[in-house]
Length: 306
Image (cartoon, rainbow, N blue to C red; front, side, top):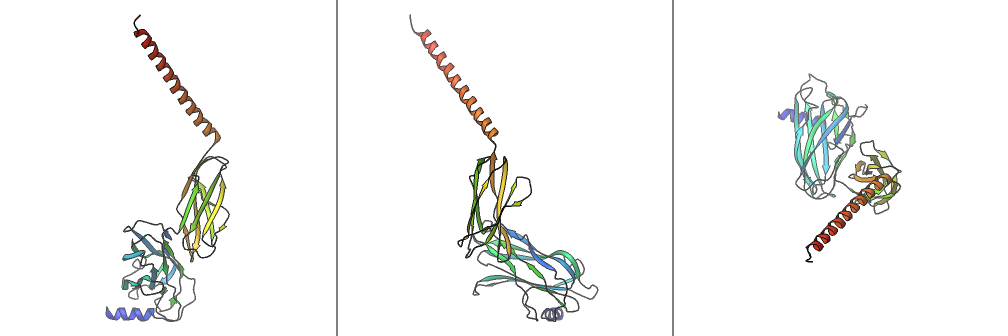
């Protein structure tokens, strides 16, 4: 076992990178919306377009003051073709770094020479996080610079050729505030869609997505935030129904979305019907009160001695 570990580290320390179409490694889901403190969530680290992957090294970084990586489990991708060796499966904290970060360091390899490697797509491993505070955090792969540096994320073939990979990072939290005001209007009236991006230090492109409940999402014109990260858009209701809105942007290479805001749009005919019902109810109540008072007065007159 010791010799196998040494061999795996040598394999992952570097040889020339063989040109090929890069496989993809990504966090799924790409974004996990904000949870309460002490709640947990699990991400999948998945791969796509792989060809004969024999060994992997993955390094993931996150904000250690927002998240705590409490469990890392091997997925079925490599074991589906043979016996695997997990050389490293650990989490570390680097609180003195600038900025501070938590690290997940995962190194695994197939064993033996019966198979060339794993191909296709699948789950490489899973990570369960516990929420430590009310904040947001990138969940980012560290890029491998090549040249046998020994750090970063890359794969390897059985013949020791390195495979560079395309990285698709993830995000925890809801970095955007978003609201639709008012939440109930009539056809032809306006709704203000507004919000802001937390921590923005420059203008960002944001896209507001909308749909009639049950339909497909469509994009409104792309907006730019001001330097404080704020944005606003006026939407005019053209038909009755329940409509949903959310906003998306890209933060440090990661596509993130806000929570969904809902607006109810009523047609004039609906309003007229409501008013009619209200009027009928009021009339019935007034008539009932009038008849009651008249009956009461008549009874009082009948009880007066002659």
